[in-house]
Length: 284
Image (cartoon, rainbow, N blue to C red; front, side):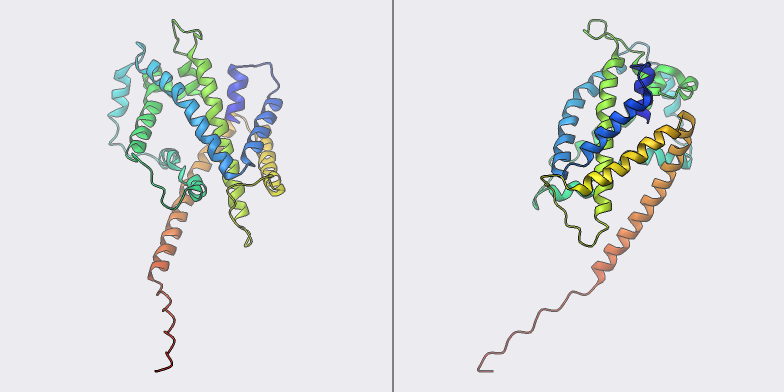
C-alpha cells in the first residue's frame, strides 16, 4: 500500500492506483511462490544492487549544506527519555529479519560459519542512525513529524549538480521499489512456508521445480488480502493499522521467544535414552 501511494503521488499521478497495486501484488505473488533457494539468490542480487544506491544517498545527505546538525544534536540529547510502547515496537521491527532466517538457515551446509560477523551490527547501527537522523537534519525537530512520506520528501531535497540525473529522488524511488519488492517477496514466502509447516506431512524442500500448486494458492490468498486492504485503507487508516500491528507483533514475538526458550530448556533437561544392553557372548 505504501509503495503504491508513493508511486502514485510522486511518479505517475495519472495512473490508475488499483492497476499499479495489482501489478505490485502479482509481482509479490510470483516472487514469493518460488523455492527458498530462488528467493535467497534473489535477495542476494537485490542487496548487491541496492548497496551502491544506499551509499550514494547517504553520502549526498551527509555532505549536504542544508543538513542542520544542531537539530540532530537536540534530538540525540533526549536519549535518556523513556520511549513509548509504540516507539519500542517500531524500533524492534528493525530486528525482525530473524523470522526469515528460520527458513533460510536450513539452506546452509552443516559447517557453515559467517565470516566477519562483527560487521553486521556495525553496518546495521550506522544505517539505522542515518535513517533516523537525516530527515531531522533536513526538516527540523518540529516539521519532521508533519510529513507522511518522510524519506521521499527528504530525498527530493537533494540534487546532484553534475549528475546525469539531477534529482536524488529518482534514485531513491528505484531503491525504494527494490527494497519494497524484496520485503514483499520475503514476507509472502515466509508466510507461505510457515503455513505449509502446520501440516504434519510437511517436509522442507529448498529447491522445487516445478513450483507446487499449494505455493500459488497460498500466495494468491495473501495477494487477495493485500489488494482488498489497499482498496479499504487510506493514509490515516494505514497509519492506525500499522501502529496496532507493530504493537501486536512485538508482543507476539516476546511470547514466541519465551515459548521457544522454555521448550529448549525442557528438551535439555529431558534424560537421554540409555544405550542398548550389550549382547552376551557365548562364553558368558
